[in-house]
Each structure stands twice: as structure tokens, then as C-alpha cells.
Length: 470
Image (tube, rainbow, N blue to C red; front, top):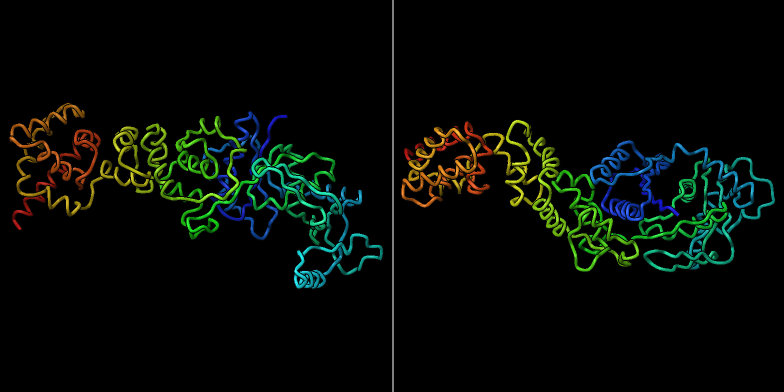
């Protein structure tokens, strides 16, 4: 049997963290076992489904790199197939029309709750013999088995047993003829040959109902794995109040997709005490049966730490690919500067996010507006005028603008003035960057370029002279 998994989001919002983790687990299981990963958009909720949400889901999947082998399939394009299955179940006596009014159902529910019973349909129309009322559009209910039990051998939770006596006859088609979730998901999983369904544990109670429908269609159920929910640090279900929970918000905040995937795979799964995983290592080591039974807690601080690690140790070429977008948001064209990979190499050890890296790197591409007040006060003093003037003259005469020659120039000026190198390098750094922290002074000057360096030194000299005059 060739493994086939699926991710089947409803397009009623963005791709959130919980959905992304489910997609990742399904994707990893398929990749580990040489199977196929299918994307299916469950868009039958016409009131809440939007094209914007579909685009957000597709965009999130693309950014994360969770490529799908088939799809996306859309349920709204499969309505004829659902109607065909509903009619088949009606014809075979495995489903029936229900004419119960909303008022009757609400009264039934109220009485059951007053008796402290589980609210459920009482099968009033199950054996109906009288003619149907002409003014009522019926729903279609599945004729659930009255006896026996459904045993779910869950790959995470183990054996879970549901008594059929506790399962009422669920609606599989509304009064307007549109199919409901439990019908469409069963037909889709069957038609698409899904072998393993990995999804949130909020679907666990749907599973016995879906298995009964599959068996009524003469189909073997897939294997199921229900993933526990994700909680916020306050112990409540993860939601907007816990911060950025949309996948694309993390993109905007400067997280690498591999860092987010690394974090998500550790939400409920572990491999010893190991924290860092590449995508290839996830595929090799991940086992859905090792996912914890308990809910996981989302920790933004740990995600930030992982992101910093992946920035520091990631391929400069790959990081440059992602950094370019963030520079563009600052109205910077990275093509109008040094090779972006060189910028990444200079900044990798200094940034926790790509937003920070872009902001730190902005001085390389354009002149800054103001000096950092503390840095200017400490380093752009009258005593710094001579070192800056001397280094400017030496740099202006330099023909070979390489990091090695630039370092030698700063050393030579310091030696000639009989001062420590910092007395030259720090005023020079503030002059060129506007702040007291940057990569090595030789790398900094090399990235900024000769003309911009000389122009900024001239500006710093004017600042020092103006400060002295004041």
C-alpha cells in the first residue's frame, strides 16, 4: 500500500499555526514513506469561504515549502459526486429524509438537556411511513448503526472505542441539497485513496461517524492520527490574543520558514533532547506514533531562539533569497549595492530575525538620517577629527578597495598617531554607520563602498567641527 496523506483546510481565514503543524506532520509522513501529499480545499461553507483565504492558504504552503503532489482540489467542484453518493445511500436504505421542523428539534434538545441527557436526534423520521408534508424541504440523515461499536486504532492515542448507541443519525445533506462536512470528507478521502488521515483532535468525535459512512459505501477506512491542540502560554487554546498566529505574519516578522517548521515539528514530537532539525532530518526521524498525547504550549521565545540559530547557521545564499524581500519593504533595491550574499555573511551573527538584519543592513545601501546620540556623543568628539581626517586621506588614495587593504589602512593610521586601533575604528564606524556597532570595520567599509565612505566621513568631520564651534 502506497501512503497517501492530505491536508484539507477550510478557507475561512489564514493558514494558522495549528493548521501549518497538521500540514507539516502529514507532509513528513508522506515524504518519509515515499508517498503522496494531497492538498484539498474544503470550501463548501459558502458564507465563510473566501478567495482571499484560499490565496492565504496557498501562499502559506508555498512559503513554508510544503509542496503538494496533487491538488489543490476544491470541494465546490465535486458537488455532482456528492449528490451521487447521497442518492446511493438513499436508494440502499442507508440514509433517509427527515422532515422534522426546527421547532421540534429545539424542543427535543431542551427536554434531553433538562433530563441531563446527551442531546441527540431521536430517530423520529427513521421509520417514517406516513406521506411527507408537502411544505417542508427535508434534510437527509445517515442511518447510523444502532448496535455495536466503532473502534479507532489511533496512531497517536491508541485504541478509542465509540458505542454506536451514542451516535445519532447525522445530517449528510441540508434542506437545500448541499452536502455537509462529514459526507464530503468521507467521499473525498475515499475517492482520493487517502490511506492516512492526520488532523487535529477536535475531529476525533467525527471519526466514528465517518467510519460508519465509509463502511456503508463498502470502503475500508484509512488509518487515523489525531494531533493534540496547541495552547498559549496561559494554558488556553492558541488564538489571536497570543500574538501572531498566521503563518504569513511570521514571514512578515522576519522568520525563516525552516525555523518555523523546526519549531512546529517539536510542538508535540521529540527525538531525544534534540532541538535543531533540518528538513531532511525531520523526514528521516519523524514518526507520527511518537507524537505526545497531551496538548503542546506555544513559546514565542523559543521560536525566536530557533530563528536566530537558523539565521546564524543557514546557507548565506538561502538567507539572501529571503532577506531581499525584507529590504524591499524598506524601499531598498539590493541590486544597487554589494552582493547580497556578502551582506548576509557580515550580518548573520548579529540578527535574530530578517527584519533586524534588513534594518541593520540599511546603512550599506543608503545614507542614514541621524547619528545614534550616544554613539555620536562618545565617538564624534573633537579628539576624533585628526584620526578621521588622516584615515580619509589614506582611503581616498586607496586603489584596491578590499577588506584586507582597508584593515591595513586603519592600522597604519593608528600606528602613525600612536593610538589604539579603536580610537580610529570607532569614530570611523560611527561616521560610516551612524552607530557604534557593526561588522568588522574592514568588512563594513568594503560593503559601503569608497564613494559613500568618503562622503560620510566628510559629513562626520563637519559634525565634529560644528560641535566644537558650538
